[in-house]
Length: 172
Image (cartoon, rainbow, N blue to C red; front, top):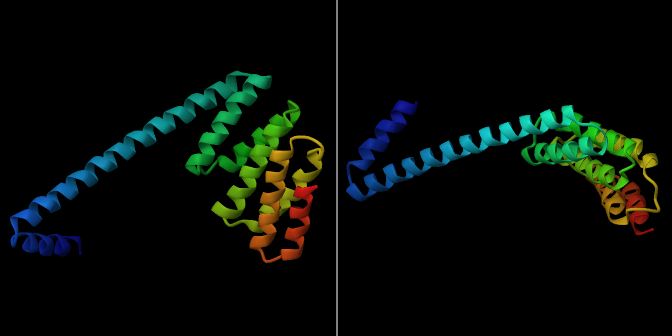
């Protein structure tokens, strides 16, 4: 199949020297872009390994700082182990009494579960498990984002009334 495509392409390219030059220019660009992406992926993988090492070697608030960085990198790359690590980051943030950071990562986790993975019911379950862990009288912006993400899971599943209940809690 690929052979036939290549042969037809070559036959087409014999008609015009300009088209041939353009075709090989496009192939060269595609090759360079793919190599650049491979290099970026290897740099990213190296960054993840370095951050994991720092997480393992530190404790307390220093560990939380590295967990936060690693969780953000994993979220941006849609890494498969993001969910597990995000939960660990949330738990460690709660142990360190960093409610704002736990709220930020909870919001990102809800978004990841519902939008990226399409696990809306599981995202709703996580939302309900996390609600009692956060006080409602502090970190209003992060708390509002958390409730908005929770409400959007209900909106995606067609439960509009429940979605409105949680959106109203954002306003409170």
